[in-house]
Image 1: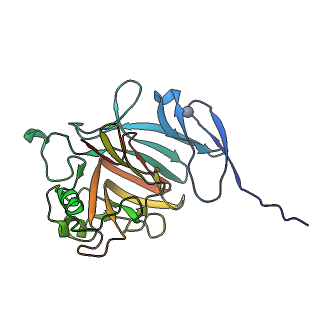
Image 2: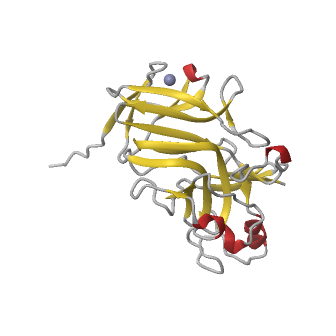
Length: 265
Ligand SMILES: [Zn+2]
């Protein structure tokens, strides 16, 4: 007799446009669709039968030279919030960290996050073989931080690491949903096309739908496999454009279509 393998089926709907879908996938996941009522944004769907209010939130901070997510009207969107009776989910759109973004205008400078950047020590240490940074096979983590820190692109390698430099405080975490050391990137793509090297991964989601996080303002992306000379050396940081919170829900970092970071050569 053959045992039937039961793949759980999840039915989804969009309270804004009415679109419905079904996933057959084990483990926590959130279904997205391009929502015509949210001007084409890739927006999360809701489990059928759950009442919810789903709406887009504009980026709170100035855009500057950030590669932000825009909707079909060209407005910069920070996140889509799903409000339920028993909690709140957030899908937040992370801008791309890139090499050729001009500095921020001084009138916009403030003592907190201001832009998404690639660490200069990461590039130098990779090219000089100071650190064996292996982006397409190492475990790369995405750790969350609040708005109490001011990241610096030009920090020394030791101060770009998780748990060091400014990254020693201000962490935002949920014990099981999004641990302090981060969520691992899955589906990493690290390669060169045309004149651009791009580092990208699947969108990164909380481990469950019962996660609580307060004021996640930015993401530190770092190499968790690297043990020496600097353990957990930073690669880049991505500014989410404001404070993002979930309550008993799902938190998803939606990486920009241009990747987590890119280098134009
Ligand atoms: Zn929709």
